[in-house]
Length: 139
Image (cartoon, rainbow, N blue to C red; front, top):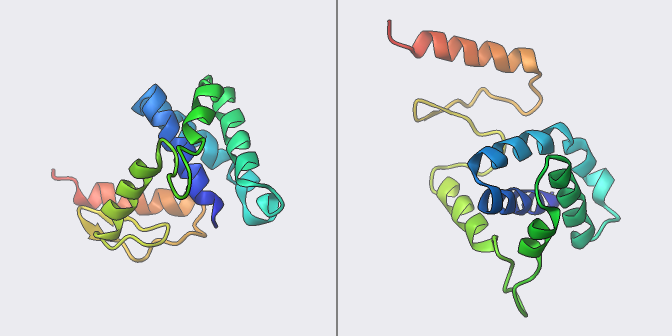
């Protein structure tokens, strides 16, 4: 899913421009609209078109889409990347050294919860989280 890198880059651009609260607001919006970025939806789109779609989504959340697009433009020739490329590399390295290579990889109190599945529905996530919060909270 090559477009997931673009989605992460757009999210990091929001973070750098608008701060952590904006990042989480945008992350929720991207998650709610994730189907728009599935392989079958973006197969015929260019990288630039996907960036534009992500910037429009940011604009719908009240963020500056023009500044976001500016941070997503190539910084130079060759593999120069863009204004958030290095931040994405750091995030990937941070998680890979911790054994995170696929989603979802979930840790509870520092231990990987290998039972988590990408096909869980909201009720299954709630049951998992409720159990861990209630069983691991002192008192």
